[in-house]
Structures are given as structure tokens and as C-alpha cells.
Amino acid sequence: QVQLVESGGGLVQTGGTLRLSCAASGRTFSIWSMGWFRQTPGKEREFVGTISWRTNNIWYSDSVKARFTISKDSAKNTVYLQMNSLRPEDTAVYYCAATTSMMPALAKADSYDYWGQGTQVTVSS
Image (cartoon, rainbow, N blue to C red):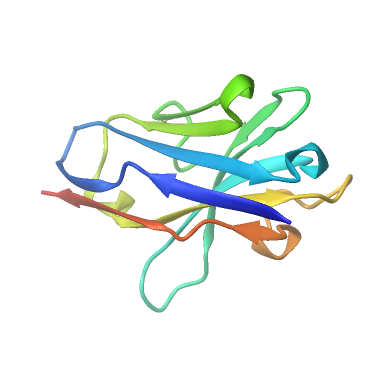
């Protein structure tokens, strides 16, 4: 089992910044990749980005590329999502997720085995 605990959400104005954290514990050696997703009411979870647990390869969705940055602190088993130039359309509940699959479809929520509790990000106009 892998446990994921998120922190760092909140309310920010348009153009502001926030950093989300996702601390992993448990069988972290089994993690292949960590992903970030977001969800608004009535919609499916949207892929934001992902980072390989071992190689640190990173992939972003087009909607956040150049504004969001994913990083990882291996000593702390923690992944971060730095969000800059936030827009009202970034408002959502943000989730981190972990997959133990070796060849997952990283942009698909179904590929992930473990999920954090979610943290609300609200961007006011």
C-alpha cells in the first residue's frame, strides 16, 4: 500500500502562485510514476502532469505547460506542483496519484492505483 497526503491548496488571485505538496509513504519503492490531476464538479478528472519516480522524466498537459512545474524531493518522498500565473479556469480540486504499473497510460486516471485526498485550489478573477 502507498499513502498519499496532499497539502498547499487555497485561494489566490488571478496571476498568483501556489505550491502543492504530495507526501508519499508506505511501499514507495513500488511507485513507477506520480501524477497530478484536477477535477471540477460534474467533470472527469483532468490530467495535469506526471513525474517518473525513478528517472524524474516529466510530462505536462498542454493547458498547464510553461505555467506549472512538477518536482520531486526523493529524500522526503514528496512531489510538488508549483503553479504560476494562475487563472480562474485553474480552479479545481487537485489530486496527486501514484501508479505502480511499469507501462501506464500516464494521462489516464484509471492508470493510477493510489490517490491523495485532494486539495481545493480557487483562483479569483
